[in-house]
Image (cartoon, rainbow, N blue to C red; front, side, top):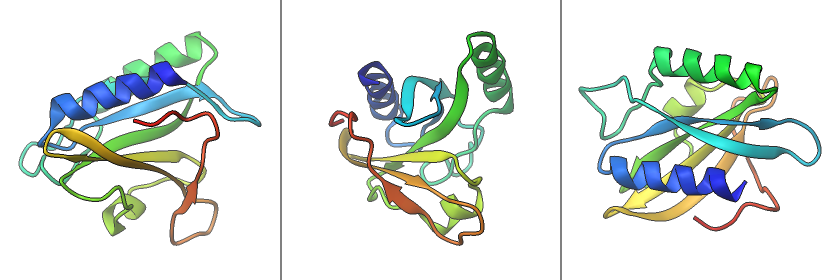
Length: 137
């Protein structure tokens, strides 16, 4: 997992002051194992400072490659430039059940905080989760 975190950190810092986004791949189970993070282009151009949408072509390419290597999409990440790593109403509205959502706060071009959220079935809010082997960003 440390390799995945380094990839996320590099991507969100490089993309600042815009929101960046990507896909978290791994193997489900207990414990959850996130082994790769893949950057996607932000398809939102007009409001890239506070909105994101994964480029569908990137998403399709990454998902196909993951299946060939027996990996699964476990979740997604995106950055919050100059804003806390709190899930917003927009984040909730565009989320899917049981996927993990890593939100990384980037302030003045540096990672400030990160939180991981999941929305279980029939929930109208996120639950914060802790990954025991997740290093600091």
